[in-house]
Image 1 (cartoon, helix red, strand yellow):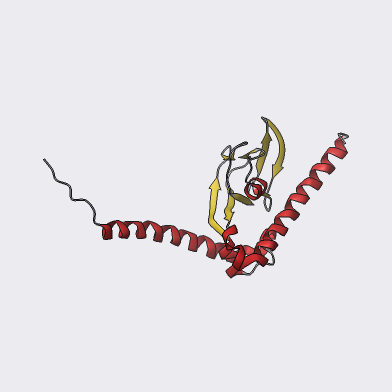
Image 2 (spheres, rainbow, N blue to C red; image 1 turned 45 degrees about the vertical axis):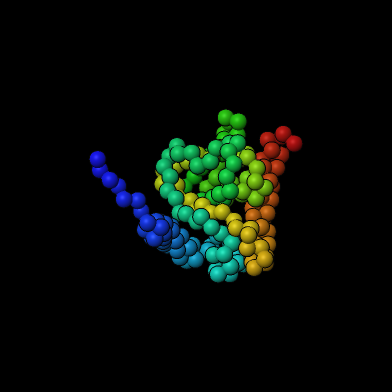
Length: 175
């Protein structure tokens, strides 16, 4: 019979630290990448780099391929997506209702209001690169001004989408 020695508490702490360090390293790399381009991303305009680091988390740069599903209608998630390159299609109740391209953002309503996703988003081109992140409202006490700017910028994006939708429907004679 083979006897297995259990891990000590110190060994377990070291394993967890290694995992945490790997995650922190990935986050640090993503944050450094973001800091080099943040001023070209409308939703981050007016937010100081140090405060941006404090109010967003789970930051990732992700590559997708044609046909990949990024989010599904009715799922719940706190991720917000910014399209760096590529094109995505928006599908609501099985019907294509829109197209998203570079510099567009999606997923913000579900993340902000903690509601189910309004639509499915799929890649409509190869090599779609997205920036994905979540907002950390727990830092409201320390970064209230920056959170307010971020939410204001997101509100402008939502308003822009509504204006485009209204224009689209007024042209087609639906309104």
